[in-house]
Image (cartoon, rainbow, N blue to C red):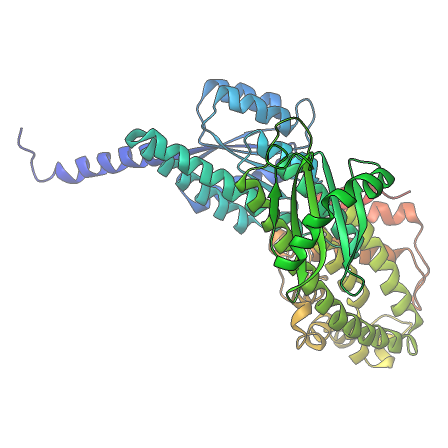
Length: 504
């Protein structure tokens, strides 16, 4: 058959549409918050050739999965009726080839590792960066496609690729878990021990601190065995292994079937700062004939190296960071000489914002950021003249314009401090409004940084419920009503509802 010239563009368009539909990937979003589903759906549809479906819980998702095949499922963990972990088990039965990304506001090592072992490709914490999610969606779908193509060519090779993907996912999780481990050193050590047990399926784990001068090993954290039993029976038997680790600065596996005097099998790996051993992580597996693999040794080495780097950076950071915060606290205190309300208000807002962030499942890093931003959010008022800052009467348009400059001034004061880049952004935008009518940049909705939106609620509630020179404090019930009245106008409704759930 010969096509007329005017038919060819039509045929080309049809072929293009057919190719488009063939390449289109199906993604199922499962979350009990419609706002979150909508954010992800809109971002995905803007980003690529995706057919996106939604479900409000695991049961709804199962019904959809039984009717249609999906390339990927993005699911929350905590949901009514059926949560994400139970859904994950069903997905692996109904559609084992579907890529799964789990999202949670309450990350825990046990939950995360359990999800990874049940087939989850990745784990993301709320509040999440939508660009990071889009990147991972694209990455994993490309890997899935590559895996499918290679499966057709050679099944053995595809299994290797799948192992590589799982290995990469677990290593990425180790990196993220250690990177997000905050608090004093004991908290970080606890996280390292818990993570080591979960990653290699260990039954016992100890973190020992090494006294280089006395050449002694001091058990600091002991899990899975009584501390006294460990010190009296186990430690003397494995001391030679610990000494070998210190001498070589390397990690070792001692499997009980090869070295009968050592039971159970053990991995020992050094924790080092500036190439000096300060501690050793020891993980053991109980059971006759149970062995550690080379891959499990690699995972523990990845963990100890990452933890060592994190601790070294933490020591350097805390020294510089402590000096900076002391300096800025002095600046905040200097404002009190002029206006006692500002310093007291800053500390109240800081405490309120910290509580909000923790209750909403924010990462330790975000909690620390909102702590600093809460303390320093009004630091720009140092540049406001007393006649305006302390004026007991209504402000003129010009005076209000001067007051509105304080977020920008605060951001400028912190501009030279690279360590506080995130906090500067929070401070700059804490007076933006959800409807776009705020200042300084008129940002709206999710374009406003999440922690700025959070800080805005804490800042406004404290301002309403405390006395000012020009007005008395508002009763708490009235302040709550005012917050509700301004949902999706001045404030993010989701943050307001989370905040009000914790008002006593």
